[in-house]
Amino acid sequence: EVQLVESGGGLVQPGRSLRLSCEASGFTYDDYAMHWVRQAPGKGLEWVSGISWNSARRGYADSVKGRFTISRDNAKNSLYLQMNGLSAEDTALYYCAKNAGSYELHYFYGLDVWGQGTAVTVSS
Amino acid sequence: QAGLTQPPSVSKGLRQTATLTCTGNSNNVGDQGAAWLQQHQGHPPKLLSDRNNNRPSGISERVSASRSGNTASLTITGLQPDDEADYYCSAWDSSLSAVVFGGGTKLTVL
Image (cartoon, rainbow over all chains, first blue to last red; front, top):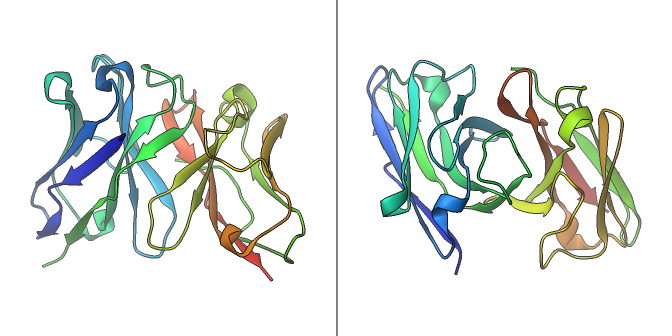
């Protein structure tokens, strides 16, 4: 079964850091680019970051650039998001998602596999 | 980052046809096309159509997608109660080097 399972979310104070993880199974992980997408409570989807199959290319939304870092470990079928300098505006459900049909970040066919998400709440 | 433009809501009757639109520019929708997602409340999104307007396995034939210039469209025929959901378009923006989403359309089936 094709599956993505996120972990690492929680309640964190403003200015602190958090590291999200996503473990993939059921497909050849290093054949695909991967992404993080978040959804604030009651709001729409917001792309956060993406990474190509070999980590050569990474992209970030302006709202997180300089604060968040995406990485992957193909040996462990895992995707990560290091989040620093968190603020209340980062409160959201964070989804890990697989690029459909392409290993390159900029060949975006859509996101065809999603995890259940991990919730991040930034509050004092 | 500028996103794609979708109408906030669309309402149609049972068994009718709904067409949802997504407007971008020549750097995103007009360049590579748009992919469509469906999201029911409390669930992760599901891909309905990729950027080439292809349906993944398991997606109903009642769903079809198309593109004209900088506007992508998703058409759902024979609306059923389970089609009531939020629908999002997404695309790669070559000028931003980023994925952009539309704000989403809430489809209500009356």
